[in-house]
Image 1 (spheres, rainbow over the protein chains, first blue to last red):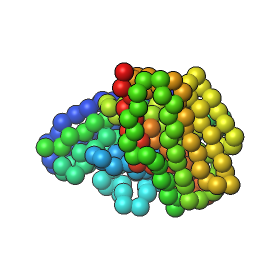
Image 2 (image 1 turned 180 degrees about the vertical axis):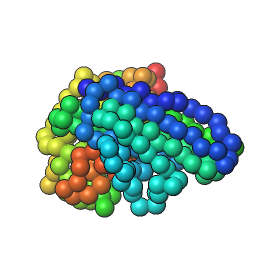
Image 3 (image 1 turned 90 degrees about the vertical axis):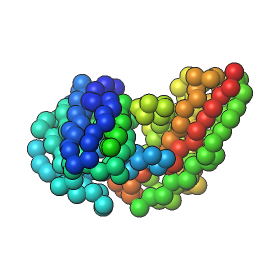
Image 4 (image 1 turned 30 degrees about the vertical axis):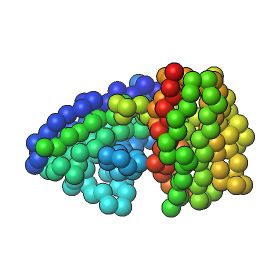
Amino acid sequence: SAVISQKPSRDICQRGTSLTIQCQVDSQVTMMFWYRQQPGQSLTLIATANQGSEATYESGFVIDKFPISRPNLTFSTLTVSNMSPEDSSIYLCSVGGVGGRNTEAFFGQGTRLTVV
Amino acid sequence: KNEVEQSPQNLTAQEGEFITINCSYSVGISALHWLQQHPGGGIVSLFMLSSGKKKHGRLIATINIQEKHSSLHITASHPRDSAVYICAVPNHSGGSNYKLTFGKGTLLTVNP
């Protein structure tokens, strides 16, 4: 299994500012992903965090708005830039391939972001 | 792109009842995930399965690959089972098991 520490767990931010969310895993993992869950909606994939290279973004998400870093196999950050109230959501990191094996997916506890 | 349908959207049960939540998807997959989300937002992975049936405690998950359908069962339900249960499948046929498309979830409330 894998234990994921996601920080912060919640934050209230002013519009126009940026927030960086951290995801730390206690094991090396092949894949790390970032998801967004807008109020009342299902989770949507933002991007795949690639170790040592630029993240791969899904349609509708861009690097300028959601820059992602992944410096090693256990850590990633997602920044929500120039925030507006529409960015108020739960953001989750997810990992798969723990220890290089075909394990189940593991999720962080989520970051509940409110933009005012 | 895979589409996921879950039913029911909301489910209220009395403690001890047998619960079934259903999930259908549109594109052939290699694995399907059942997840549990609590009010704070955190998600716990319950199962990842690619065929047949898996059991963990009072939870049972089944999948029929040919019919593109999976069910999650809870036996002897308890108020602490109250949560949102989410089905998730790979975005695309042949895609990564971990790049997921999620159902809208089933809100389960178990009353004492």
